Length: 246
Figure 1: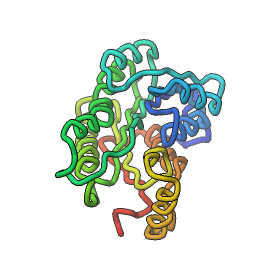
Figure 2: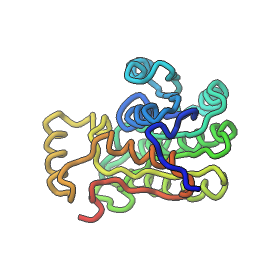
Figure 3: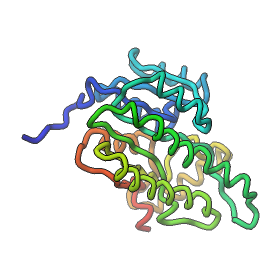
Figure 4: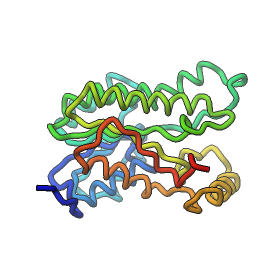
């Protein structure tokens, strides 16, 4: 008998969102809570965690941790205990620029959170995942359509795609998938001026088949889907408004 997806399909389940205090992570936490889940958000910024909790149901909880520190991650999941779904959306502003003018130490730091942080999170979260659970990681479309100056971002995205497939095999029957967003209105672009950021959104949006850049709520629905469905694993789902097509 096929299970039907209902408005509260995650009722009774516990969802941990790393990077859940803002942007796509917070939108995913809100969507999971609306689907009936008990949500746990984690961020390195205590004030953002407290602010985010005000937009979530009272049963939601938050933790502060530096996701680049292995000992903090291990302690974090020991505190959280058993849960059903892990979502990793944590990230900082993108490192963009031509390789010839990019410091190698900055490249290593760029991998520290987005790749090594995700890897360590999975290592310490996995023992606490309940049967039937899932892990959803985050990459991007840079590995599929890199532009000039995107060598670091494309490398991280490609590494996350490969890691997803490898973990799906190693951690089975826990499902492991990955979301690859296109351009989305989030703090990822915070280092740009307001006018430059608005111009970029307009320019890219007009070039896309859907006619606009993404909102965090658009991408959150993909994480929610990957938690709900029980047959797909090892997949990277592109949600980019058609960017890789044009």
